[in-house]
Image (tube, rainbow, N blue to C red; front, side, top):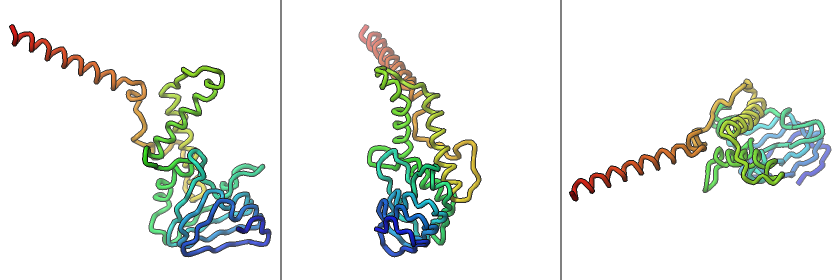
Length: 220
């Protein structure tokens, strides 16, 4: 690794390299990184590189890897002045997708979630939001607390918007006041409140009752 190398001002890495977390941490004069056909780039690879202003992806985009679920992908992390990534611009060069496509493809990764075998990134984020809302109540011993759908939806939307605007700023896109691509695979209000299951159960009971009446008429 190149940890704390103060003389590095720019880096060009290419062809199959894997860049692990903290590989270039505390390189305080590093201002530009160019990655050409790099395989993997782990979160916080440029941790606390406070002068970093530009990251160029050329010909392909590496597999961006989060440290663990719920931890947003970050190039440089935070310092006492806040989020270092807010000063970084992403440039896409011959990667085969537009900035808008990059935004929507990696949006949830920058919120800290990715698809896995069991659920989509948006579903994982929905469940994480629920834990965030429940935790203060659990901490007080209220283990039966259940957030309302509106609380869940608003918190989910706020978290998604924060990640989207961070990524938009890095890509040089206009910021938005509402998420532009809300997922369709999170629960609806009826599903969350169990109304659909209740309606289906009522319908099944009605059908069962109709069949019983028909059998009684036939037997008579």
